[in-house]
Amino acid sequence: MKTGFIGLGIMGRAMAKNLLRAGMDLLVADLNKEAVEDVVAAGAKEAGYAEIGEKCRRIILMVPSGEITKSILFGEDGVASRVMVGTVICDMSSVMPTESQECYRRLREKGVGFVDAPVSGGEPGAIAGTLAIMAGGDEEDFLAMKEYFDILGSSALRIGESGSGSVTKLANQIIVNNTIAVVSEAFVLAVKAGADPQKVYQAIRGGLAKSAVLDAKLPMILERNFQAGGPIRINHKDIKNVIHTAHAIDVPIPYTAQLFEILQALKIHGHGEEDHGGIVQYFEGLADVEVKCVQRGENHGD
Image (cartoon, rainbow, N blue to C red; front, side, top):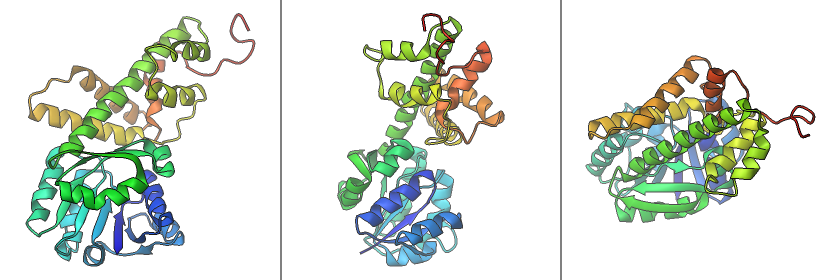
C-alpha cells in the first residue's frame, strides 16, 4: 500500500526517512525541492497533491499551519480532489482544534477518515523516532494509523474525538514554552548574582525543579547552541493558536499571554529561526548578562 507524506521541513524530512527505513512505499511532496530531492534519494517518489490523494490510502501531513493544511487538502488539485473513499488522512501539524474539526467534517462527507495527531519531541525525537503523539479522531482511524505512529514515535495515545489531539498539543506548548521562559529567568538571576550556572544546574536537577525541559534546554543555553530543533517562529505560531483558542472559549491565560509578547519581541529582533531555548536571550537583554559555561578562572572558587 502506498503512503503519502506532505511536508518535509525540519521534522517532516526526518519522519519521512524513518518511514522509508521501515519499508514504506512513500510518495512525497513539498515546496522545498531540495528537501524533496533528499527524501527521494532515500527511496521515496515525488508526487503532486492530487496524485497522492488518488494513489495513497494513508496520507500524513506535517506542515506549518492549519491554513496550509486546508489548502493542501481542499485547494484546486488538492488531495481531496481525487482522494479515495476509505482513505485515512493524518495531520501531524500543530494547528488550532477548530481547523482539525473542519478538516474532519469535510473529509467525512467524502467517506475519508481524518486524525489530528500533533507531536512533541522536536527534531531529535523526529530523527530518533521517539516522538510523543497525541491524537484526536475516530477510534478506527486512529488504529489505521497505529503502525505509522509506532515507527514515528515512542508513544501514541488517542485523546478523544476530532480536535482533541490539537487541544493536547496546545496544552503541551503552554507547558514547554513557559517552562523554558521560567528556566531562563531563573538562570539569568543566578548568573547576575555571581553563581556558576553549570553548578546551579547540577544542584537543582536532583530536586523538584528537575524536568525534561530543563535537561533538554539548559545545556544548549550554556553552550550558546540555538540551532533550531523547535524554532521560535513555530512556537510563536503555536502560542498564537493557544491565545485564539483560549479567548474563543473564555479561558484567561495571563502567563501565556505574556509569553506570546516575549516570543513576539524575539521574532522582531531576528531570533525567529533559532531554537526556543533562545528565549533566554529576552531575559538576558533585560538584565544585561549572558548565561553560558563558566571558563576556569572566571568564577571565584575555580
